[in-house]
Length: 215
Ligand SMILES: O=C(O)c1ccccc1NCC(=O)[C@H](O)[C@H](O)COP(=O)(O)O
Image (cartoon, rainbow, N blue to C red; front, side, top):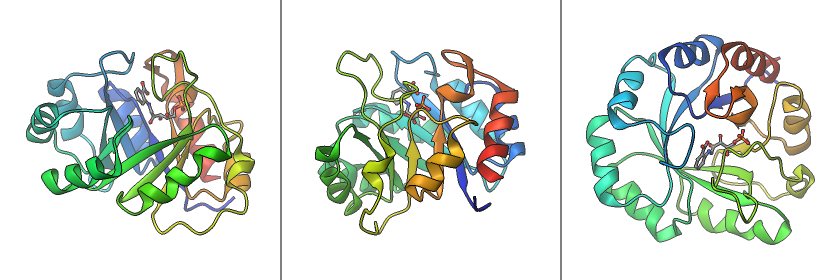
């Protein structure tokens, strides 16, 4: 497996786990702003965490169908490098968010079957990055971070995408090598797979995942 894989650890909420991710080689750290999530943090906490992130590690804020009032507060409070839109934001909304905040936007796209693939092309025209994730089950409370993988063979033989993209969904230290090999992903994103309980990140699991992804 190539060693230039870029890794995002999502849903961090403590200084210790942010430091572990950065020191182990993560390229991105993600903060979740979604009240129903066990990973949700408030703006003041996010600001403190973000201020300690070393240069060169991108600070990503994950929101779900957030309005401008919340995004204004977020952008004013937390030093950020990227916004991750993880809801039903339309391509037009992606463009509006990019224009309003002047930050790169990564749009998450849920994949369950081949019928979901055309969305990728719709968003690659407007987003700076794409997050190709498992589509949540119908009754799921969370639109992401469910620890579920999708059928990676759906991405085999895909056309070349113009935007950088990340693979997400059900990754772990055990399966990341196979996931990268099957999909050709150069970037990977993980949340549940580095937790000891929902919302509780585990430093050893973070270190093991990053080592496995970079091996
Ligand atoms: O993680 C959450 O709680 C969350 C809440 C609302 C929307 C998205 C959320 N997570 C999305 C992520 O970026 C995850 O890293 C991605 O879906 C992969 O999650 P996992 O399968 O748990 O590794």
